[in-house]
Length: 126
Image (tube, rainbow, N blue to C red; front, side, top):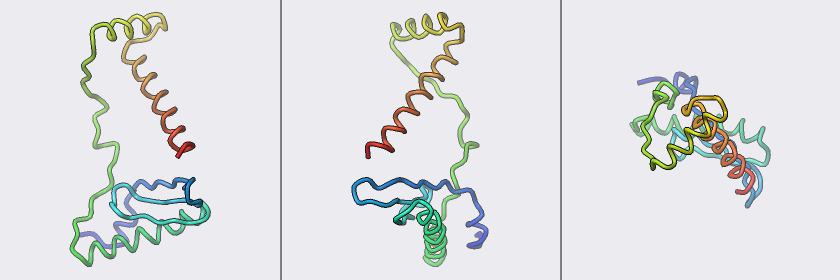
């Protein structure tokens, strides 16, 4: 079992999101379920998030709760299989050819562009 200080040094992903309905900002650690705090400013949310993380870890250790390690990119291979209709496959292959890139590169471009748009909309539309 690690100490509090060892857990505090691990690279847990933190999210700070503006609370458009209540005002202020919400900070959380997705890998540490229920570890969340609120503040009036993003800077304050960042500071309070570290306090919340420490308190969450202390309570978890005290209660004998199994503390998950941070999710890292090492957990993902960068590959997945995807089935699609033949007509869509043809359309994607033709568009990639027009762009002068592989279909894999074209699909990566589409996925990353649409993910960025979706993330932006989610942050700005609540």
